Length: 278
Length: 300
Image (cartoon, rainbow over all chains, first blue to last red):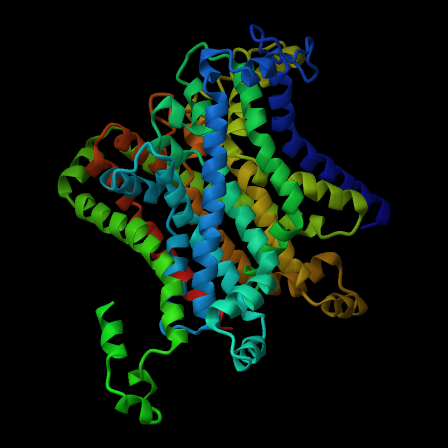
C-alpha cells in the first residue's frame, strides 16, 4: 500500500474509534446539560444548556435523588473495603503459595482460577440466597464479601505471575539473616510487589464501584442502595426525568474514571502481565 | 486444626530422624503458610463452595426444568443467548485483533487515542447503557431525530423490536468489553520479538504476509483462549440486556442470565437455577479446556 493511503486509512480508523468511544459519553453529557422538562437531543449540538440537573442532584432536591449523598457514601465504602480486603486476602494467599511454597499451593491456584471462570450472573443467583441465609442481605457487607469473592481469584492469578518473577534468593537471604515469614512479607515481599498491589487494589475498587447486578439483588432499602442501583430505580418510572438521570450517572462515572487515569500505568501493566504467556 | 495440633504434639524423636520432615513439628514457616491461605479458603468456602452446592441441590430438582420448558419465552431465550454469544463475541474479538495492531503504533495521536479508548472499560456500564437507551428511544432519541432530519422518515422502534433490541444489546456489550480485549492482544503483539518482523521484511514480506506468518502464529493460542474466556463472561452479562431493553418487548430479548435473574426476583429459585444449569453442557467443556490451558501456562 502506498504510504499516503496507509496513513489516510489510519486517520479514518482513528476517527471511527474516537466517535465510537466518545459518542455515548458525549450524549450522556448533553442530556445531563438539558433543561429537566426537555431532555430531548434532536441533534448533536444542544440548544439550551443548563447546570440545573447537577444542582438538583448535589442538593438532593428531587425525590429520586433524595439519598444521593448517602448512596454515594455507600458506593465509596463498598469499593474501598472491597479493595482493602481483596488485597489482604490475595497478598497473603499468594505469599503462602509462591514464597512459603505451601503444599497444595497449585490446587489453591487452580481453585481460584475455576472461580474466575464462573459467569458472574450465574453465581449471583445462589450467592443471593446464601447471603440471605447468612443474614447479610441489605447490608453493605453482602456486597463487600461478594465483590471480594469475585475479585480475589483474578488477584491471586495475577499476583502469582508477578511473584514468580521475584528471585528466590531474596527470601533465602532474608531467612539466613533470621527474618521470620512475617518480616519477609512486610519488608521484602510487599515492597517488591507494590506495583502489582496498586494494580490489584485499583482493579477491585473499580469492580466494586461499577457493579450493578449484585447490588441490585442484595440491597433493597433506599438508604442502603449504591448509586448504581439508585440509577436503575429511575427506570421504574414511565416519565423518568432523563436529564436528572444522566446528570447523576455522570457524577457516578467520574470517580472511577479519575481513578483509572491516576493509576492507568499500573493497571494496564498489572492486568496484562498474566495474560501474555498463555 | 486438630491435625495441626497432633503434628505439634509428636514426640521429639521425629525431629531427630533426618528426612522425616513431614513428621517433624510444624515449622514456623508451615504455620504461617497455613495461616496466610486461610482467609482465602474461608471466603472460597463460604461464598463459592456453599452457594454452588446449595444451588445444585435446589437446581437439580426436575420440577424447575418443567416450569422452565413450559415458559413460552424459554426457546427464544436460548436462541437469543446463542445469537448473542456467537455474534457479539466474534465481532468483539475480530475488532480487538484488528485494533490491537492499530494501537501498538507509535504515533503520538494513536497513543493519546488509546487512553481515551480505554475509558469505556474503566467507566461503569450503567450510565453509558442508559445513554444508549435514551439515544435510541424511538420517540425522543437522538438517532431517530437525525434520521428524520435527513430522510424525513420515522426511524424504527429500536428497542421495541426484537432483533433491533438484541442487536443493540450486543453493540452495548461490545462497546464495554472491546477495550479490555484490545489491551490483552496489544500486550501479546508487543511481546513478539521485533527481529522476526525485520527478518520478514528483509525477505520482502508484505504486511499481510507478516501478519500471516509472524503475528498470527504467535497470537493464535492467546486469541483462542481469549475467545473462550470472553464467551463465558458474555454469558454472564446481565447489564447489557437488562438495562437496555429490560428483556422486552414481551420478554423477547431475554438471554439466560436475565431470565434466571427474572425468576429469582419472582422468588422462583428452582426455575432460576434451572435456567443457569441448562447452559452447563455448553460451558463445562469450555471451562475444562480453559482450566487445562491456563494452569499449564502457569507452569511454563
